[in-house]
Length: 137
Image 1 (spheres, one colour):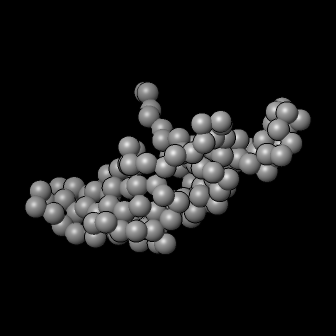
Image 2 (cartoon, helix red, strand yellow; image 1 turned 180 degrees about the vertical axis):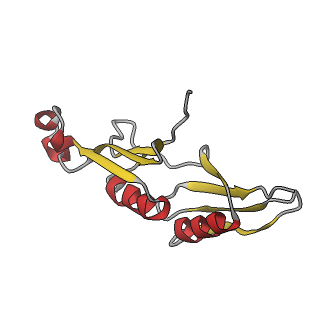
């Protein structure tokens, strides 16, 4: 089955970000730096930058990340929000507490008029998140 994966780009702190997300979600993290790649000689000043990171859990990729911004420079905006549909009250509360730590909460986690538990925030890396839990009726 085709799977859609978020690919996050950072400005030199991709390692810190994906290690934080690994603490929040669990799973297995692999990181390849520029210095570990065949491109190391072409970019000696970027040898410690993350070329590609992959966070997997239960055999599926949760997210990819990189420091490879390119000449266009990183512009953080509001066009992408990562939405997680949680499977329990415990999961949504745990993820909300972990992911929002050090960030800015714009909508506290609470039961909404449509019947779901919902909250949203921007994490300490500038990534926007929406968490939702639909309780079975």
